[in-house]
Image (tube, rainbow, N blue to C red; front, side, top):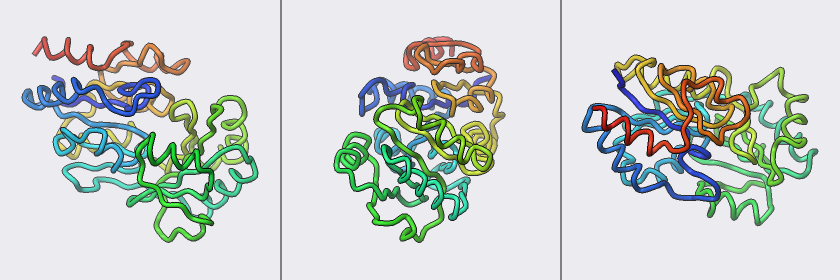
Amino acid sequence: MIQYIASDVDGTLLHGHATTLNPELFDIIRQLKEHGIHFIAASGRQYKNLQRLFAPVKDDISYVAENGSMCVHDGKIVSLGHIDTDLIYEIADAAKEYGHCHTLISTARTGYTDSQDPDYIDHIRNDVGYDMDIVQNVRDIKEPFIKIAVCDFDGTEKRLRAYFQERFGDRIKIVTSGNIWIDFIAPNANKGSALSNIVSSLGMDPKNGITFGDQYNDLEMLQLSNISYAMTTAATGVADYATHTTDSVEKTLRKFLQTL
């Protein structure tokens, strides 16, 4: 018995340079709810941004945000990760040393960057639609940290991931999140553990779901549910962790609804 649907966003529900979700998805979410099946958005994005993306159904779904570092149901935080302050400072300093990248530091309230690059700031605020404050120094931020991400517009696989993996890979989990981001994940936080926490708190069996994803930050989530779909455009090897592949979440869910 399927009790929930959980889906990644970028590369799974959003493709290419799309900044808005397919309106059909909102109708599907409403139909799922009528059948007692709960929808959960699971993303590396910040909670407020996800609420805007899912605005027509924002109060009907739950959220696994910040790659599992922040879970929200019914407007209440279910779980919140934490990354050591000094480690955040070290990663931010290493990003400055690397030079050709930009940081996005997450707290439960908002995002921060010490980048002064106008193109990056415009991309985050207007293309991605994030809440983001600009600081001169990350040490000026006085809130607990839940995630730090690094952006390289040239892509993460050439040098960026290896650079940070060598420096910090033995101290914190690093995952690709889309084509131009790497995320540093709070200890014990990932989409799978976060999804398990949130569905268990709702009285559901974590196995009784359908999950969708396309990147390495989706692996634990894809392994959690009995039924899982990797996108046909997924990163190399991701499909090995899923039970099926699909080129469209909406198409797959439409077929599923027809069986109910």
